[in-house]
Length: 78
Image (cartoon, rainbow, N blue to C red):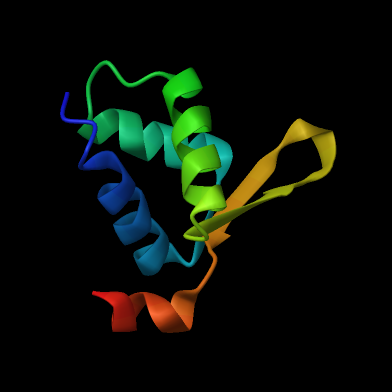
């Protein structure tokens, strides 16, 4: 599993969908990267949130929603 590509894949997924619930993001990411764990996704999202790439919001019933933090500026960075 090439872990360097996972953040780029997450950003690509979020660009296409706008936002995803955590469970759906995990399901789609795990489909592309075998051996990917939920713990790894948590760590990765935390790092990406600190970098200002994504935002993670808590929803009722212990669910979470993930979205791009700077949608307008993401294209300018590339």
